[in-house]
Length: 380
Image (tube, rainbow, N blue to C red):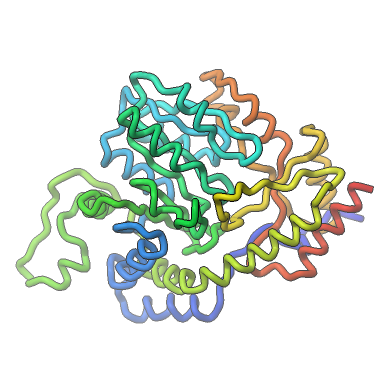
């Protein structure tokens, strides 16, 4: 069979309907397209879903994490512990803030940062820990809370992939003092691009809202509701990291579908898990009993652990019209970070032997069956 330029089964697609179209159109018709009522509604709905005090909409996960690091005083001379097995933004943002990333290894079963290795990496220069909920599976946030408290460290949960996931029955965002989510097109809910900070600190959330808009003392919404001679001030240097009301309107529509999205992802994941039991070629992901993932991604490992097998399997899927992606990257092996010479055997083993199968709410049962069928050809 010849290579497929347009896969029969896509890897991921955002799930938009008439509700999102109409929500965006209404925002445009209102002429209030930034800093307005739809953003306020989206932030309130998001915070409620996370069980958090406040939510602050921003232009991306990266800008949100950067704002938090800056607002919390993390900068030059500080070290921040982070897994290498993560999208490189988790590492880059530490450098952007002027601090130094320190890589910790992972638990190869869950793909999440190993709390014991993170503890071993703490030095007098350590100022913060940035654990990642990899592929939507919550990290052991209780272990990291204890570790942060014992060492007087800032804890920021990288929840880019885990909106809608639960840890010990509680939603991600309700336990860590600060969490940052992504609203990118591959996430469980999306505004195309964007991010959301959630925090238990009301004063901090007000500061973050100022910083995302050039340090302005009044939001556009507040200024609009005031007298014409109520002028804003700029008490601190800020940035332009805003998310628009058009995006927020789409987000409100998306968050209303969260339960349906999660249910469909769970159904697809269960079909994969059933089809991959004792599979000869790949090992299905493991989910600890105390977590409920949102199945943002479905990552498997080739059983022999070989990079060549992983790549051959991805090529096989491609030839048969199924799109896949490599597993989560090992950031410490990328050019900007190789000089650090981090020794992370579990990270490197997982990064070289894993791939992700298609999963999104728009997948049909026939699509899922097709993925498993194509995989069976390779096993034969």
